[in-house]
Length: 321
Ligand code: ADP
Image (cartoon, rainbow, N blue to C red; front, side, top):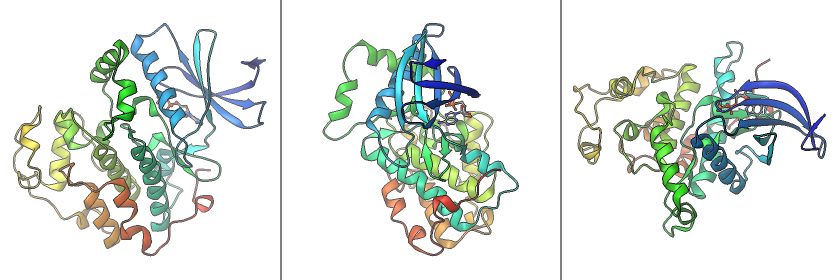
């Protein structure tokens, strides 16, 4: 039995926040796909908005390092989002103790992550929910950013994109939903978000990418806070309490509280095996002041990516059995 006269349903792949994800064959192309079934009606309006926004954003994004939305349609009271099928994700790679990640492999994974982000940022889209299990890996080894349910357009100088979102009732409802949702995976959350900033930008994705870079090097999450307060505590204990000279705007943030002074410990002691180039890039991505933080484009131009070893080509990357 075909869904929408086109997709042959196969096994369930997993349970998402808003419904089940199953494998299917696209009879039109012969391609294996993953279909995200989103229940409509049962949940609050916010769920539907989230799904609709994911469609809207993904339709505008086409890049080798971004998951492709192949199709979207309503069927039997559910919204179906059809994505290219991905074999694995970066979390599975990091967790797999049988996998050895060489410096060239780590460079390759980071480069693909940053390339996907660079494309988003160029289109004025923030991912906002970067974490290893949202970085999917295809059969060809390519890494693709997924889960744009929480992505959001940020202000472009010409306001071209913000305009389409900036009118009508829906936008204000969406604003409310975003405010109420705990949107970022805490361990990957930038310090400005933890201090309650409302004017965040592309830097939040850079911070999250830095956490993922560190996790690739360490094979465990670097900053595992148990609450938002504890998350900031973990960040400060690792990089030292930010001095006002390092981050002048910090004291004006809505949830700013003074933390007990902790000196920075050298990054080298945390990453004894990383190259000097890797540590230099990592420290620039972990810059406290979002205005001073390296951009994704600058990160891609950092000498870490041009120095040896060259990044492993995607098809040669190690993958879970
Ligand atoms: P949510 O983010 O709402 O929790 P996900 O998008 O992570 O839901 O989907 C749940 C599960 O479905 C994932 O853990 C994964 O196993 C599977 N999945 C999601 N997208 C794909 C895809 N494109 N290819 C293969 N499996 C997928």
